[in-house]
Image (cartoon, rainbow, N blue to C red):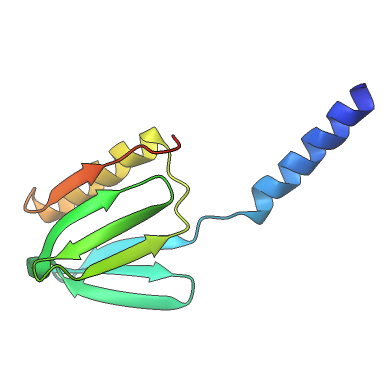
Length: 104
């Protein structure tokens, strides 16, 4: 019994290292850049309409309704607050930020 729990714990520990969230968001020169793995995109902040924070990804919606996705985030509730605070500070509350806590 204890050996089964030990082996399960070790496997879960190893799996925790295998899944590393890789979405990156940065704001520089009045542009928001985001990266999914090797793909990097940049959007002018004035083009953004709103930002949706979900547990597995972030959706950036432009004013022309074009959507951009940042995947592999693995967000929890405290991450939502940190990301919202960061974006509000950098964007001066110009863009609506919504959070959806599915699977959190």
